[in-house]
Length: 343
Ligand code: NCD
Ligand code: ZN
Ligand code: ZN
Image: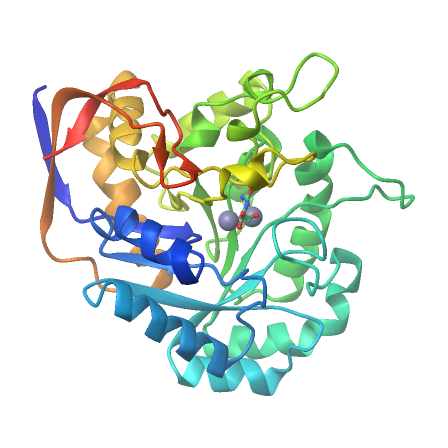
């Protein structure tokens, strides 16, 4: 196969940031993905209609042709009224990161406090607003801290509880990294979907940490942390299966070198410039190229109830070397040769 043409894809989870960083990174996504779910975990979280409107305007100034799917973060201050008003102004997603679990989540609600926000979730359910979450628990059942590798599995009971309690709430399980979570999503009702990243289909824990569990490759460090080979295999299987519950969300999350050099390093991998070529390679290696289009261009839109993108994009087999950096941000696979490129 020398090339393929697919419908223009969606990125159902990415972090274009704000200010100077937004100006640098948004185009890497928007050149390829004309639409995407913009996560609002800015230093001051996007938490109200006004915040979302301001952020939308900032994005529009950088690329007026990009269609952002806007989100507000569930914070300790979120009320049913805030959610209702935001939905009325075209905010489609209530985004959840448990308190202190990932980048800029200090104002988030802990998994153990989520029951206090049931009126908020009930409102989202009634409106048809998506509840999209980063499902990791930092603590075990006794309240003791968990190693990063165990945090996703320990969040499954909390997720199950939400799904049981809100049978009509559309729930997204973001960036699945474990076989257990893949199995949960497969067995869950139709209103539960999941985004998969390309880096979690490529990396495993040994690409991130040394044998003592210390982070040795900050550029491969993100949350949830990459897991074992069994998990990677489960992700690839789900991704290439044609199951419409699984769709693409890059979780492209740029951090400047200075933040990556800290101990611990900032969590997040910048994949926007390489995401589609890497997916192409992965689907080809798994004899599933014919299923790529549904994974990146159909299933996400359908889960969200959005029309499919118009237009097409061509990918060709034509090796290129990935640049190491965009400005001060390391690019995933920087310095490596990729077989597929966007024509
Ligand atoms: C993301 C970021 O930096 O915004 N980081 C990450 O490691 N994935 C936040 C997130 O998606 O959890
Ligand atoms: Zn996350
Ligand atoms: Zn993310």
